[in-house]
Amino acid sequence: MSDLEKKESGAVLMLTLNRPEKRNALNAELVAALKLELRMADGNDSLRAIVIRGAGKDFCSGADLESLRQISENSYEENLEDARSLGELFAMIRRVKIPVIAAVHGRALAGGCGLATACDLVVATESARFGYPEVKIGFVPAIVMAFLRRNTSEKRAFEIATQGFEFTASEAERLGLVNHVVSDDTFEEEVARYAAVYESVSRSAVIMSKKLLYEIDSLSFDDAIEAGSKANAEARMSDDCKKGIGRFLEKK
Image 1 (spheres, helix red, strand yellow):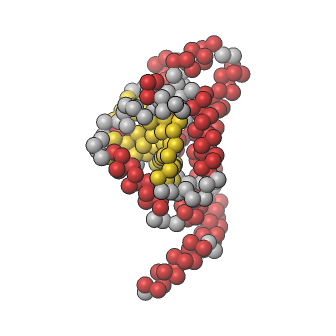
Image 2 (cartoon, rainbow, N blue to C red; image 1 turned 120 degrees about the vertical axis):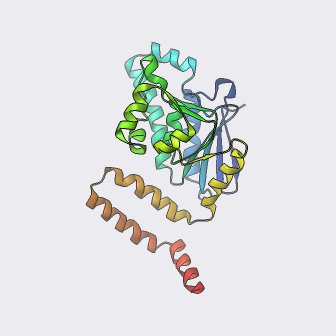
């Protein structure tokens, strides 16, 4: 049985972390499998969205015990290589052209919480729990910090990263880490409905919007306006925009 299962439903790719007996803990093999599937999905022009979810009771509990044991025995260079591999996965989620949605149920802790935070969008059940408990064992939620800092305020990010507490889906929504909290009973349907939205809007417009949104993180205000102007002009020239304007004018 594969540690990562995939299924296409319409134009949506579902990637399921499939280590339920390990609470879908991340190891080198699962991280590599996720990166491979994301690369393949990025080249598939028929896809509109990607959903990452967990099998069993939890979304993802972070690193597994064997990985933690290895961390304690590795050299600095070995640990740096391993950390960069996870960082590459998180960064890849942002670089994939189409939206990547985390569907969180149960617990999303440590690296699992990082995986959810690195996704473009998060849908969570009412009973879901989030947290970065790394500081309790002398570790640091370091790789996800770039995402955490961009998703919530500086003071909230500091609190979340340094106090190690778990928090509810409702609290995560209030903090800006979750887009929507849905009933546990209707979770599957709600996630499918949420992802399917991208089948009814312009794929090219969504791709350009995602690229621009993350690109302006590193730009000055004036440069961000200029980047927006160029994206606007590029969008006007796209087939989707020309067809969309045509349909709008016909209605009028």
